[in-house]
Structure formats: structure tokens, C-alpha cells
Amino acid sequence: MTRPSITTETDASGPFVRIAGDLLTQSLDAVEGAFRSIKADGPQMRLDFSEVQALDTGGAWLVADLSRRARAAGTQVEYLGLQPAHASLIETVSKNIPEEAGVQTPPRGFIPWVARIGERTVGGWHDTLSILGFLGLTLHRLVRTLIMPWRLRRAALFTQMEQTGFKALPIVTLMGFLIGVVLAFQGATQLKQFGAEIFVVELISISVLRELGVLLTAIIVAGRSGSAFTASIGSMKVQEEIDAMRTLGLDPVEVLVVPRVLALLIMLPILGFVADMAGLIGGALMSWIDLGVSPGMFLTRLKENTGVAQLAVGLIKAPFFALVIGVIACWQAMQVQGSSESVGQRTTASVVQSIFMVIALDALFSIFFSEIGL
Image (cartoon, rainbow, N blue to C red; front, side, top):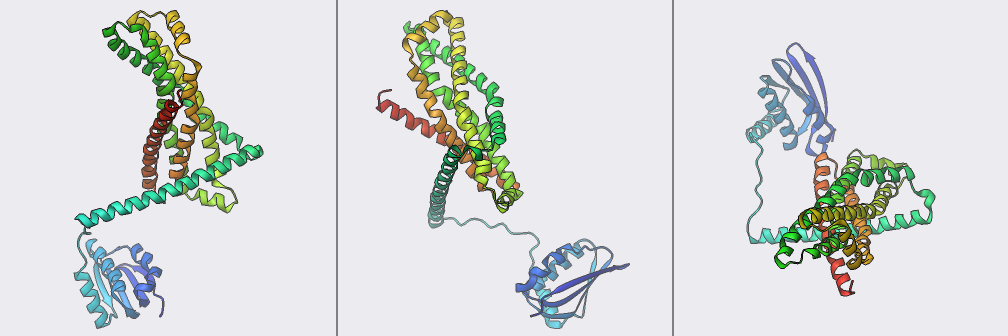
């Protein structure tokens, strides 16, 4: 078999395309790009087939598609040296090329529905195994970094701490303050019916310190920092920068994942504490305005009825939330497949999965602390 080749010359009447070799399906990769690059410039396009030795349906389709594009541009197409059998095949293929690409409708019915469920179940199981493996790999790199701290990329760590922590302080503080205000206002509305307004202090402190402060902070971080992790690493995956790292002998998990996860592990407890304090301030301010509970009385009841254990219960969750957010965000980034559309899809999936896992993990912690009496 002689591999096909194309040479193109252009004169006043238009392009002259000389085709040689065997235009067979198994060898069309050699000329497919050349066929697509031919432009119909001029009133006439001449295709010389005198050196074509063999032609099958795949080759005829390339010729017919080129002719169709040329005629659509107003250029006449002339075949030179074409054997009768090849001309008949090209004519048959030309008549059967659809004007518009068909849309394949998915199969309907009970069996295809069960098949789709099975595919999604198997895909979910494979994703679960993959993310567990990625979690183990990340923990291994974290432990190795703690044992050998000189391997840590400090510049990257401090940069990520600034991005995930310092720059998130305004939104986290505002969120905590408003949550405290809302709890105080809604709690006061309900407690006034029973003459128990003073218990609004316990309502605010326990709700904010134990649950809402760190939970809502983790949700904000998942939407803000988790999406940024997926988008940045995913873009590097699309541009093949991660493959270049591996070529240079660098470990992408150690270079890209460890600084981000470690930054979250450090900054999320701090952000959770800030949210707790902002929530208490907002609740105290609203209690003073709406119920007349002075700041001094608020602090007194806070000290008497809310122990440090409530704050600890909330902050203990923060490192676990941080690990979940960081691992899911980076794992989703590593699953990006060669297009910007994939980056957007994986970023969305990262935020949704992170928020879901944070809420599920918070529920498990609530059950655990309830069982041990905290």
C-alpha cells in the first residue's frame, strides 16, 4: 500500500490539487488535515486523480466533503484522471452525505434506564476508589513533609495562606456577624412568647460556637478557595504544565496539592474562630437593641452557661473540613480532560461535592459528640 499524499498549486483559475497514492481508510490520517486546509480560492478547483491507485469509501468521503465545501463557496470542481469506478464511488458518497448532522436521541425504555443507573453506579464506585487513593497519597505527602520540613515549598504555602485565609477574613467576619444578628432576632421573637428572652444568650452562643460558625465558614471556603484550587490546577492540566512537572522529575502532589491543603489546615480553624467571635458580637448587639440585654449581662451569662468545650467542639471539626475541601478540590482538578469546558464542569463538581461532604461530616460529628455526651 502506498501512503497518500497531496500537493496544492494555485494559479489564476484557482487551486490545482494533485492527489497520489492509495486513498484508503487506514491511511487517511496522512492527508486528512491537508484536505481540511484546502481553501476554495478562485472560480475553479481542479483535482488530479491520475496518480491515485486505490480508493475506498473513506477516501471518497474526503473528496466528496472537499467538493461540497468548494461548491458551497461558489467554486466549480473538476475531476481529472479519475477512473470510472472511483468516479461512481465518489458520486454515490456525495449523494448520501447528509446536509445537517443528525442528533442521536438516547435510547428509551426500562432496560436502557437500568443500564444508565448501572453505569453511574460503577462510575461512582470508581470515583470513590480514586478519591480515596488520592486522599492516601496526599496524607503520605503531608506526613513526609512534616518529617522532612525542608521539602516544604514555603513561598507557595504562604501565598495560599494569604489567598485562602487573609483575603477571606472580610466575608467570613461579615457572615458570622450577620448570623449572630439573625439568630438573636429570630430567637428573641420566639422566646418573647414565653418570657424567656434572657435565654437568647445560650441560643446564640451554643448555635454559633458549636455548629454554625465553623460550618458556614467551611461552606464559604469550599465555594471560594476550593473552586479556585480546581480552576488553577485544572488550567495547568489543560496546558500540560503538570505533565511538564513530571518530565522534570517534580511531584505534582507535593508541589501543588500539599501547600494548598496545608494552608487550609492552618487557616480554616482561624477563620472559624473569627466567625465565632463575629457571631457573638452580632448576637450581643442585636440582643441589646431588641431585648435590652446589656453587653455586661450577655458576657456574664456567656461565661456562666457556655463553657470552652462548646468552642472546642466547633473548632475540632475545622481541620477535617479543611482536609475534605482541599482533597476534593485538587482531585477534581486532576480529573480535568483537555478542555476549558472540562475545567468549568470539574470546578462546579468540586464545590458541590465539597459542600455536601462538609455537611455530611458535620452531621457525623454531631452524632458522635452527642453519643459521648458533649
